[in-house]
Amino acid sequence: MKVEDAIRFQSDLSFFNELLANTKIKVLAEKRIKEAHRDSYRRSLLGHSLRVSPRLAPDLFKYVRKAQEKLELGDKNIEVYIYNSPEPNASCSYTGGDDIILTFSSGLLTSMNEAEISFVVGHELGHALFEHYALPTHGILEAGSLDASDAMKLMSWSRRAEISADRAGLFVCESPKAAISSFLKLSCGVAHPIIEFDLHEYSSQIQDLSELSKNTEDTSHCYSSHPFNPIRVMAVDLYSQSDEFRQLTGQGAGNKKLADVDDSIHKVLAYMEPVSDEEKQALHNQAMFWGGAWVAFADGHLAEEEAENLIAQAGEAIYQEGIQELEQAENPVELAQARFIESSKPLLSLGASNRCAFIQRLVVVARADQNIDDRELEALTEMAKIMKVEPSFVQQILMFLD
Ligand SMILES: [Zn+2]
Image (cartoon, rainbow, N blue to C red; front, side, top):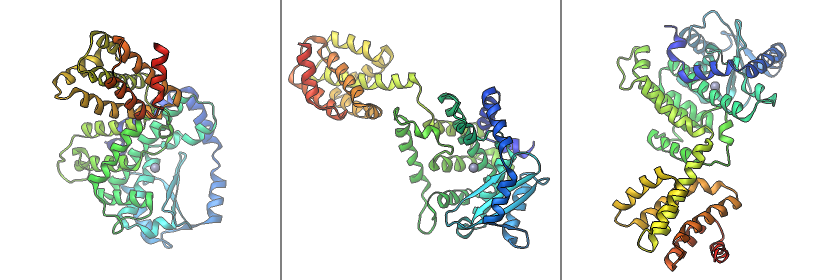
């Protein structure tokens, strides 16, 4: 098997093929590649950076050659440039053919050790190996004629392409530790000894991403070309333990199947994907159910009308699941309250009028038995506060309904 097939993240390849089968995207991509002015790029590099030879930068060239060989890119002619910037950065320019241009900032070369630089070189050459240039994401988006769903798909692919490139980097340096410390240096400029890296603690930041993903109003993360760093760290760490990677690098059997590793990575990548309309509706219905249950149980029992109304508002499936939990709970009000606080979080990103409309729906559910007692009113007022709606709004609706 060719090395590129062995290490490429499968869903990078499937998204890549799917996008290139989209005529509109393919035409935009080809146009952009044709317009890429390689000569003027080289001229500007020659003017603003230093082109280095194996004699001028023997160590760096050694790392580049090693990566080139491991990635089976021996037939390519690689030009290497160093430019002056304290920010650690590297890039690869390749648009097919035999020539690859790699650039490194001085900040990257002075802050990284051999294994870290090898990771970066492998990552950059990985982009060339997988021919990612065929989908110049920014160029395609700049054309401005893609609809939002195609644009988001393109960026989803771009994040998958980075996972593949990271695997190429890991394959070259063979050190997950070096890969992770190079991520740290690329993201904040420093690593050990300033940062005592703790994989477990860092991975917990993925939890924050899962919260972020439920923000249905702000979708800027869906347009990010790179996966957030905690995702890349997790992906590299998992891949390094896979049976396939360990066999490939002669380290014996691993403790994870690549298919399982890829599954876990898909799950966290999904945090950066747009939330579908059905998912949005489900989030609403969850919050509606727990809010409704909180009021309904506030007066000690669930009236038949209240139950019917809850089903109508939240749907049968959510109702059945929730009601079972409530029946088993020692204190159903407390449970409903906790669940409401949790499930209403995604709705906080809604505009004020939508949050008010949500509270209004809850008031209607609460009034299903034609009566609101003090405990129910208190629960509704609490919910309004949680949803950042003026509490007096509850009173206003009740007056209006009377
Ligand atoms: Zn990259």
